[in-house]
Image (cartoon, rainbow, N blue to C red; front, side):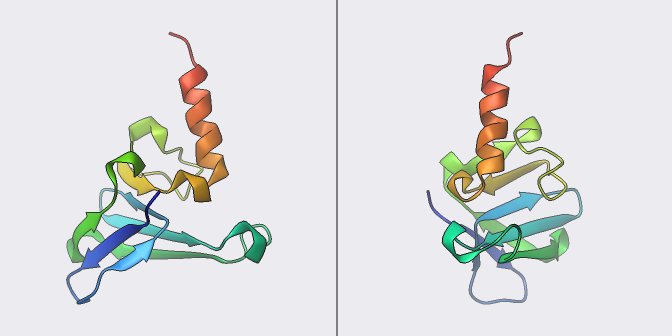
Length: 103
């Protein structure tokens, strides 16, 4: 899957992240080091950008998650977001749990 690019009002080039979660007033941007390069949450960078400073977010349609697909335990959740699920096994397992639910 591709990385997510965030364009802000005061940066000429877009910044790439592994996940960008959009909330009511801010975008939470997460970049995680590869498994071999980190221990626990070491190597995870988080950037919070006020929503009024965001021009747009560019991500593959396959990475778009909405509503309950983003748990609150994942950096506070979001209304929607673009997430490279291969970088976040906790999201993959959450999506599997949602798929297994029967109504």
